[in-house]
Every structure is written in structure tokens, then in C-alpha cells.
Image 1 (cartoon, rainbow, N blue to C red):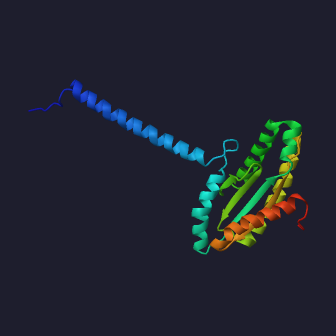
Image 2 (image 1 turned 30 degrees about the vertical axis):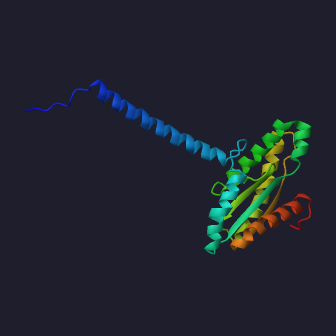
Image 3 (image 1 turned 90 degrees about the vertical axis):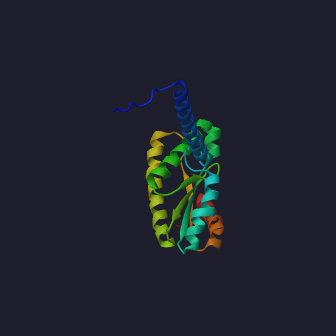
Length: 196
């Protein structure tokens, strides 16, 4: 005797349709949740991480690495003259400068988390990078910056420059201090006070 599947009745078809709709709705909600979660930690202009991400990163990944005895280094980057660019060439030029620097950082540090830390400041997190390694990375960044400035001068009429400050933490209690230390070095670089 050959068994045939039962014929689809309106109630069976409706129930299957309801299950499908619920599953589809659940998938759409999960995707939306992921999009909102990503938007909450991204800067809309540069697509880099934002300050909220920095706070989470510091509380989680950086602290965990430091507790394991591994170093965490950072590089702070501050745009020189962004207000002057905005005032002279308009805010769209200032936005362009922010985007250009963000792209430069992403291109040269693709393996590291980078965030827009403030209006004209960026931070690069360098997990498991020692102070000696950081010195090499910072020197390379300064060379790349000069090459980038030459290209940007040909591309845009406004000045493109940024200051750099870098520091390393080896203990959890040092992390907040290295942000201040790197900020101080960045300020000195901005005002030509570093003896490089």
C-alpha cells in the first residue's frame, strides 16, 4: 500500500505560513539588532569605532590583556588646524579631512581597532605591542604621514597635518594614565615641543 502525504488543508497551510512569518520576523529582528549594535559603536562620518567602543574596549579587552601581563599600547592622533579648515574652506572640507585621515589610519593599521576618540582625535589600540615595538610603529607612522601629506597637497587645497602621541601600559592601573601621557605627547608634537 502506497502512503501519500496528507493533502494540505487550509488550517495546515495557515499554520505553516504563520511559523514561516514568525521565523522571518525573528531573523529580521536579529539583523536589525546587530545593525543597531554596530551603529552604536561606529562614528557615522568615518565609519571608525567611536568613543563608546573605546570605553567598552578598555573595560574588557585591554584590561584582560593587562591582567594576563601582556602590554597594550595606544597611538593618539589629533588633527592640526581642523577649525581653521572648517572656517576657511567650509565644514564639508573639514569632514573630508576627517575622512581622509580615517582612511589613512585604516589603510596603515588594518589589523588594529581604531576609533574616533573626539571631534578631531583618533585612537589606535595596539594590543600586545611592547614599548620597543611601539617606537618602531610610531617612527613608521611619522614617515607615512609625510608621504600622505604630499599626496593630499596635490588632492586638496587645505592643510593636512596631525600630531601623534604614543604610550604603552603593562599593568591594568596604568591604562588610564597612558591615555593622559599619550595626550601630553600629542600636545607637545602639535606645538613642536617634542625632541624627535
